[in-house]
Length: 125
Length: 125
Image 1 (cartoon, chains in turn green, red):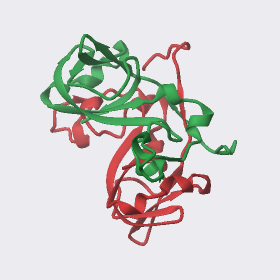
Image 2 (spheres, chains in turn brown, purple; image 1 turned 90 degrees about the horizontal axis):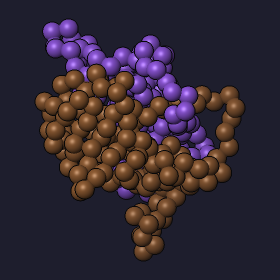
Image 3 (cartoon, one colour; image 1 turned 90 degrees about the vertical axis):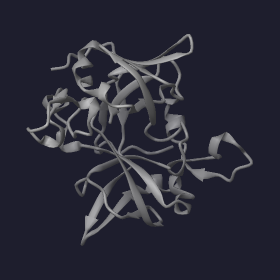
């Protein structure tokens, strides 16, 4: 397991919203206090969604540094930094998604490889 | 300023390394304990570097939700989630970089729009 030096900096992430999946539709729903940050996003056709693999947020999973890509044991083991594995020291996930609509604090997207309820950290264009 | 609810989850980021710029060359230098995570990265020509805008890590800068894109006051104000602005609630930066070489815990890259010393959080392929 990775040793942490108590003198090293730690940065804090506060979720800005969450992924919501219902009836084959998918939204990013922001907390109301972040809604102003969406101004102008409706002019774009896609958005990069940054979210957190919260189900893997344990010291054990955060200490995994090598995996079989896509969990496929036929594939040679590889460092997590050379993969998109959902286990890694900092559980950041990135997905570029097609925007269907932006309304108030909700963005409807085509789809995202995330569970409903996954915490969203940031959006970028 | 964004109100934080004391019941909401907070996620912790531990830097895995840093950006190092010297004599017109640029490296991502990992902490030794993360080096195993690089296995196989040398087979790829590029890497997505996720880092932290640590110079902006103040409650004031993290509360900014609207900016003039690229700091250009001629451009209409826009929500930070529709930009790449270095001020935003969670100070995550993402840059796709060309790999020049991978050696031990160091990756030489062509360049990155980051200060030398910027904390690196994750790498993905």
